[in-house]
Image 1 (cartoon, rainbow, N blue to C red):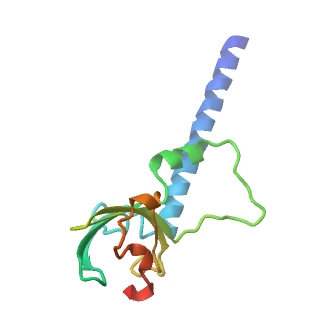
Image 2: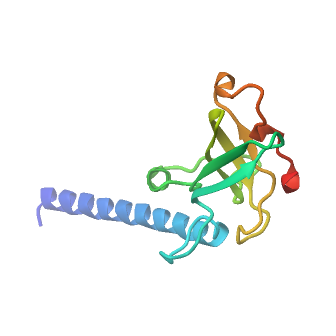
Length: 161
């Protein structure tokens, strides 16, 4: 075996090891999310998860009928997971992990006869399975877009009061 072949073989082996480490990191990250966030990820295609789109109707204190549509995003997209797995070094912090395993976020749209309001929201699940939620915080990206003289989701309290 000549020197050029040995160098090529060594490079191929290093590339294979690198790809193997990437695949291990990606799959380990997904396995950890399956364990830590069962409300967001499942191997079962028919499982009912918190992430996705939810819709319902309610009446505000002024008795105006409204429809709310929530889109809860997964905590980590496949692209973000792939980027995390491909990093050469971990980002370290002195206080340990800062990732909240119970946090979720998304977008909401409230429609009524008075118009349409767009919100961003975030919240936490109270239970491991995600069947109970803590208070959800709603905010607008642009205060000008909120409808004036109107009950809005900023006024919501724990327990739906």
